[in-house]
Image 1 (tube, rainbow, N blue to C red):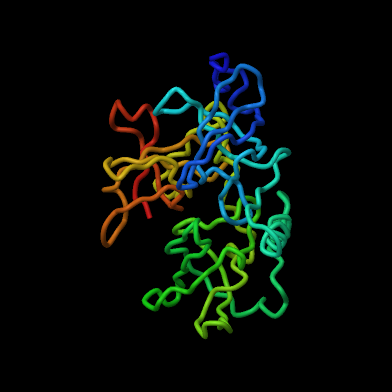
Image 2: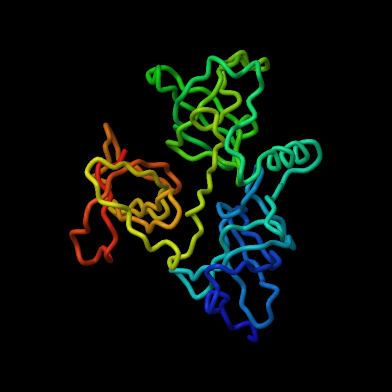
Length: 296
C-alpha cells in the first residue's frame, strides 16, 4: 500500500535511469514485474523485447537491473524499458561456454566504432541483402540477397553478426555478408554479417529511447528526400502505425498501411526497418505529426 507512486511522475523521469529487482516472471517468459529500489514507488511491468542482451532476451527472478520508466497506456503501472545490467551493460542469459562467447561478442565494439572487424579472408566477395525475418527467441533468421531475390534466402544466426549494442536483427534491415557452406548441414549460410560497406550494425538507434522533449524536431518536407526509421507502434486491427526516425532528435511520424509499397499483404511488425518520405498532416486527430508517404 505504501508503494503508491510511479517513477514516471518524477521531474526528470524521461531521462533518469532507475534500478530495481525483478520479482516475478510471466509463465511464457515474455515479461514480468520489477520493484524499483527507490522507496515508496510501485512495481513496473516489462516486456522481454526491452531487454538489451547479447543473445536470448531473458531475465531470471531476483535479477538486478537498470531501466527507464515510461507511463503505460493500458494500466496504472509504469513500464520499464531499455533494460540493462546495473551500470548499463548488456545482459547475457546463457551460461558456461555459450554465455562466455556471447559476452565477448557484446563487448567487441564501442559507441565510437564504425567499421566491423571483418577477417582478411572475408574482405572480398561480399553480398548485400535484407533480413526477411528474424526470431528473437531462436536467435536466427534469413537474409535475401539483392542480386538474386528469387532464390531461397540464406540462413543467418545472431552469433555471426557484427553488432554494437543489443544483439538482434530487424526485419527489412539492410546487411552485407559472405556466403559459406555450413559444415554441419551442407547448406549455404550468411557469415560475418555487417551493415553496408562493412559498417557495424546498430539495432538500437540513438533516437530510440530519447524522450518526447528531446525528439520534437520535424523531418524536413522535401519531395526528393527519403528517411529511415523503425516501427514503434502498430496493431493488426488498425490501419495506422507510428515510425520513429533513426536520426537523433526527430519526432515520430504517423503512417498508414495503404501507403506501403507492397505486392501483397501489408503486414507491419514492431521494429520493422522502413524507408519513407514525409508530407504535412491532413487530419486533425493525427496530433500534428507529419505523415509518412511512399513507404518501402
